[in-house]
Length: 461
Image (cartoon, rainbow, N blue to C red; front, side):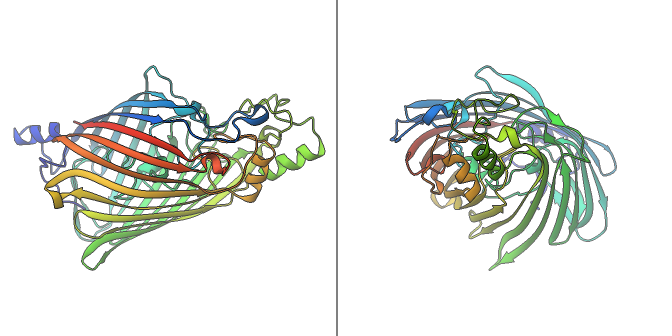
């Protein structure tokens, strides 16, 4: 834990100003309020593709030049209710225009802020509303700094923490100091979390439920159950947590290697949802050609490919599981490396996150202290995604899922190489230049590569 002291640089100025005027205690907070505003723009030049939306399929990345943007503003409000109890509310506004209606990329969606229900006009919603209760079990004192979704206080190194309400599971699990805070770091979704982690969430990335955490000095164990959407990749949530849910278990160990801090995390998840099996969809279609993408009368992705199987005919309650490894390590005080790898079973469709069954990412992140720009941030990373054999066979026959489906496929790993530099233009604002090269979009060697040029403005207050 970092020291709970007034922060004039890596800081949100508003709370510091109140502290300096004697109006707020940044060591032991009763409340805090923070905010952020982020704009991200992306441009994709035209790229080569042997075919696009073949035979009426609908989920190709368009090979023509396109631009995309997101704009978001968030307010983080927190209050202490009683000893160990904290209440958080996070309203948010977002506007967006994705590339190709958010189709055609599996594990490497170029802008992590894109949502499945967004529109160019701004929409407001409550992203989080949750209660956190901490129970001390002894150990050494640890100071928590004042931050968004964190009240400054002193806690013990051995404690139980319970979080209940509406939140993102990524608020609590799969944290990584060098790959995850994408409003300051990388832009591509491959670096937000495991691309193959189909964590239960609505179309905006949030869920209802609870997480219990046991902190025991250098070890932490987290277990949680949260809601899933009623239909894959949609906004409406199924609150039957005894029947439809996402479970997760994570074990974390913090260590020191050659005098530098690091951490290792192992995460497993198990989802019980109304999902379609790729193998069942292709088997049914082979037996009955009338069960094709154009004859579906229930939820589908609108494919016009009459020669293709469709997941809508085979959706039933099924289980999806995966396991992942997350490593971070400081090399110096200002340079760190990260690695994530996850294997999911790949039997069923994407329900909440990306169209990925196995994923791997790694990279380096650095602050600019070596060139006397300590608040500048730069990084280089690579993310790779793969799909299962049954997923590939379904796409080969023209099937589509929540994000991909070109009508045919020449199967290959989808990957992104990303490099960015973020210039600190004031104590709480950054401007970023970003370049991404994506190969084999939608795991299809018949299309691409794709170059994406990006810019980001981010301010905190």
